[in-house]
Image (cartoon, rainbow, N blue to C red; front, side, top):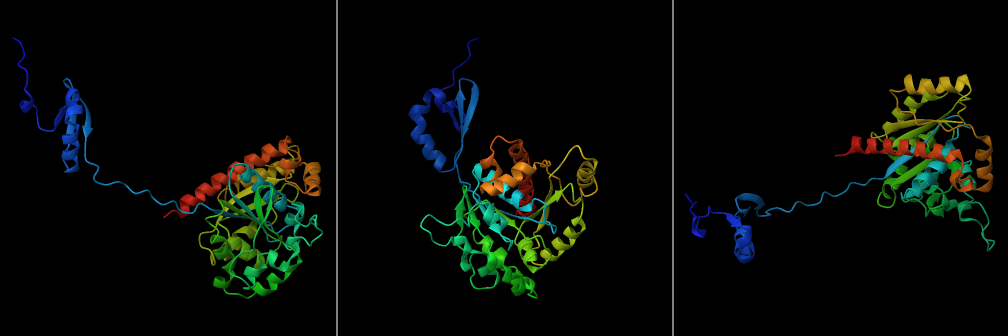
Length: 335
């Protein structure tokens, strides 16, 4: 028995045939705007739904993604300044906006980037001026950081002899006063993705202000000096959290690592096992005295001075670990 055809007025309400959609589209859209829903049918198969878009979801505003990192070890010669320089450059080559802050009165980072070189016009280098360093924020001369100096696709706030007086000024200040550097850095969250602070190899109020200004602490550890000063880290972080409760330990980075030395292997194993609760350990940076002495003399990051060196691959591996640590930190502080 032949099936009886359904006339248009017998079609269920809210159903539109694909063969008639073009003719009925104006009426359908008008009805959808009033809140009605339709099923689009191709022969006997329902292929789509036409529904009113009553609410357009608003785009969630992005929170500032700037991460502030402080490289710190109380002992000198840990590779702290080299790590700051090379991490910053590696991040910049990945397209990140990077600010380096030299907070060490010895000014090694500033010198190693060539910022003390006399300009061609014979004028005094900007990095030597009183207003060039973070001292103007620490001693309350200004509320904002000085204008940075560009170098190797990064911005740099240099250090010089004028920074030495900041330690005396900071001594005895209350936590809210020691947080001035952090507030000044956070005011630049729209300009930078990463800020790296090269701290002095010391245990004083200047170091505390730098650590408290950071989101994460990175601790370079040499195989030769072993685990000295690691026990000091928890105390420094605890003190800095009185100023910045969101501070966390980022990761250990073993520098000057010699895989053929039992002592170096024991240090690396201790960091990855005994001290794992404090934080992760990045892949080690091998002992390469030649390149890490020559690059500062050339006033260039290692990747610029010797781009094909295996050291560049090691630095990139550490950079990956830093990026992961920053992502974890962002999740911890997300609202």
